[in-house]
Image 1 (cartoon, rainbow, N blue to C red):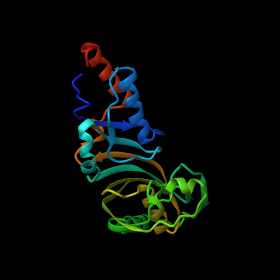
Image 2: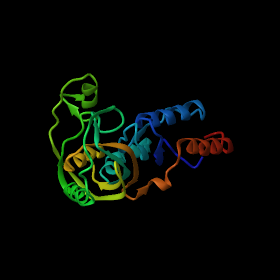
Image 3: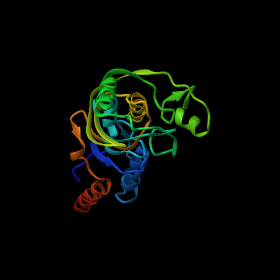
Image 4: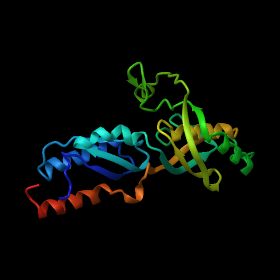
Length: 236
């Protein structure tokens, strides 16, 4: 098949919308076992994507899972859309709009200032709907149970923050950042910096280090490639 999953492979895939990162791993493990008759293959991913996000995931198999931390530390690039004038509890579309705010006062100059204030090394409070652990429990699990959580700010690094389309209330962006940055939290802070509110309506991870989404497989495309190779080499 051209792949040696047990020894270790690095696979770039495009995570589908509404799939969790573990859905991707589960789908491939099931495919390996049920369709290719392979023993259970160890697979890990180098960085979670929210279910409502799409884009690049790096999967590591077999011995290559030892490189996961290396990939997780690489710079990441995202594109997406903020919607101004409203907020949600999750800072994205997972939860419904819970507050509305004025936008009539917002100018291009204010947007430029907001971008500047959120570029560089900044302090960011992570979303309560996140995988951060508090007292040994994932924050999002407690948040979904209606528990009040107080997350502490932490330092994150945003190297580039560019507005690529401005059509209020929508604002398209491109962000280049380091590990630990939450784009949903940037949406919240962007809205607050404008004296309004904002939430994330679309997000795509386009790059991890030198690995690009343009070079990634769609899940079904990757399965077809493996099916074809398995038919040519049935012993694999």
